[in-house]
Length: 207
Image 1 (tube, rainbow, N blue to C red):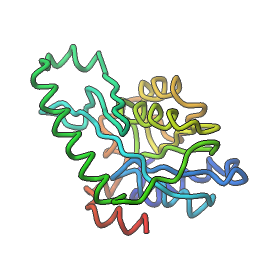
Image 2 (image 1 turned 90 degrees about the vertical axis):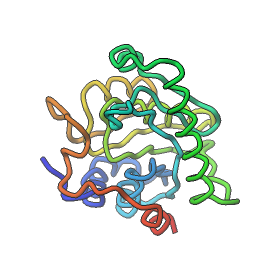
Image 3 (image 1 turned 30 degrees about the horizontal axis):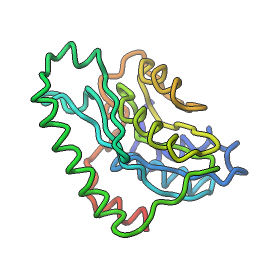
Image 4 (image 1 turned 120 degrees about the vertical axis):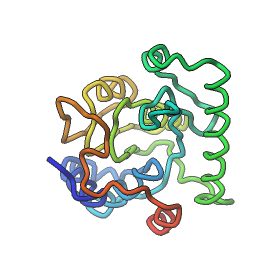
């Protein structure tokens, strides 16, 4: 199965989340690619839409491969298997983390400004991305969300590797994913249109 684009992937994903409609869920898209998926899910099942800011710490020569990820509130998670395989040293890792923290703060300023995020406490929270290869980014997102005491955390993605599903299942109360290929070379392989979203596209979806 190949999704035409993120919006149609979100509509397909929403058919597996109909049981959440009555809970008036809070859909948290992971920028940038998770936001159009989350917006499409919200259009089908209702609820509120917001973002959860996290950044992947990608391997320099293979950025889609996460050696870890960071989120708001200073949360960080590492992927030891990737770190040991790549041989990235502490200095290189620190440089990458510093750059990603700066980008996380830039995005917070662009998409939040002075506005406060929608409170998570007591809500059914659905963390949405356009897919999971290693799951590191979504693990961080779950840990950031858990700090705010939601009643339930659901992770929903259109496509994932089996490894990422297992990793994220330990962090979320429920994981929903309709497409788990035997081998996932990269999330983009599940889409016909997997273009890099611009800041303005995310802004339009949030407003």
